[in-house]
Length: 590
Image (cartoon, rainbow, N blue to C red):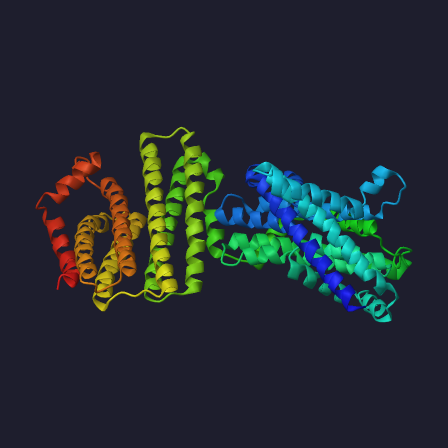
């Protein structure tokens, strides 16, 4: 093979891949986010999921993009794992459309219309129309349509260039020997997976195989393992997109890999077993572009038909492969069967709210630890628990709304109201802890630091908030009044600490003792810490009201109770306030 042919092959490959990328980007832009909404809403059963996955992937011409969307939706809690399985199966079918388009090159007819459908003629026509729309007439949708047509034209042009470059290889003994080695199924699968993983597109790698088929060297037993490997290699994009995401997002990517891996293994065993027993007549048949496209389609349809009845087992498999005790606990805590007994359902809901409080508390501790010493694994665990908190809030809201449809007593209705308020407070505490985490990440990435004095003050405040959060979670879990009444005096001390720290840090900024950037981060930390204590106070007041005597003011009006508490000389409150003031506020006023 001459140097000019090598350059022609590489140039054709470059044009082909750029065309694929351009067409895919244009199709995604044209969808304007509508495809994501369709995926999000219309996945009520696995059969709809398969259809949607097929249609969306056929439109945007990227199974990787469809699967990455699924990973994102699952990570955000918008879509459940069992909803994603159908879309992933359908995506594998939809991605075969490109190969079917490229198989138009096999058309042989003297009919003028049919001649124009051949890629050698259709490619330049589409490219010319596309570039006119894109550069000269294009604004908005017209420009995007031009990009799509130009990309499709470049695919055909690149394909033709690769075919011309490899045509001389058919008589080269070394090339013949190389292709014969791909008849080894393990090597063929490995090469197909590697090439597809590198270019991150099974459509593109199948297109390259179709171009090589014009040499006449691609037989069925060579193309088959390569196509199986291409289906496995395309999973790399989803796997990369799941890095740092939630456990369920990782499971979605693992499901894509498991589906393609299981399908490839099953059909390798079946086909090689059948050939060993019966010597299949098509085993050494030369594959054309159309034959490759059809086998690619048949394989993906067969895999879906084979594994679709076992989609629930596939979900269980990936849950075993990517385990998470936290998420199992979430799923088991709320069962709609409990709704038949409102008192039992309320208790299960309360246990879930307590669990939310503990998740928020754990995330607060992680965020504070990361301010002192950043840890990526801790950051990932934080994000998983924050996603769990958000999902639990939605689950509990829906659960309690369903519970209100039952015949509830006045006391039970009050419990529902309390739970709704408290779960919102714990979720907001989790959000403020997430703000602290973001500050910790920024401090780590920017290399900012605080003065020794500022760190000492910050530690005093974080210690106070850590204690108030611990008191809040414990009092809500145990319903012990003696713990609940300790929260409000500590919250008032935290308010005083916030004011003191803010004033002292502003003085440091004026005296140029710290940079503006680090100073703003410090003030952001102080604000979020104080807001956590506010939500702790709200939770504790519910416990105080529930455990108060019948004629106690706190039982009737929480606002009046708090006002009286802050403006009275009640010994219990005064003593607790003085103790916390000495324990924490004095550490920053020395």
